Length: 162
Image (cartoon, rainbow, N blue to C red; front, side, top):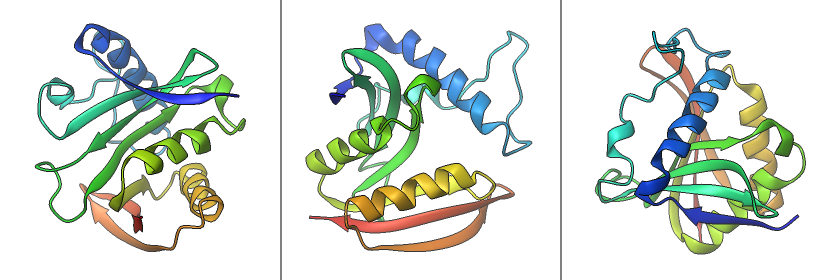
């Protein structure tokens, strides 16, 4: 399966908003901090920053020319401790378990060298396991820590891609 990243233009922002609602719905299984809005969707409170602020870059994940998910990457000035933060990463259900996520991360690593920060909700063991498999596949040494952020246990990894 051919996987690539496509930078999201502002004219496709509604598609991203729809994907974000699906992503946040998935995350709501692991936290009480996400609730559905009165309009029937899950909303990302900082969505307006996407595509309009330097250092906040969204990409669609495309698998065999079909929309398979998205990734939101943060860089300076939104991060000062590392070069790249993979802030949000979402693969649609039909593409999970088929190597699409791992291939997308490989693309990210190929085009974005430097120090990284990636976090997962502690209760979301599928995500924690996914990232550890990616690091193993990419032969990436990482440091993992756990902390409480906004009342939630968060597992995060830091590493360098050369």
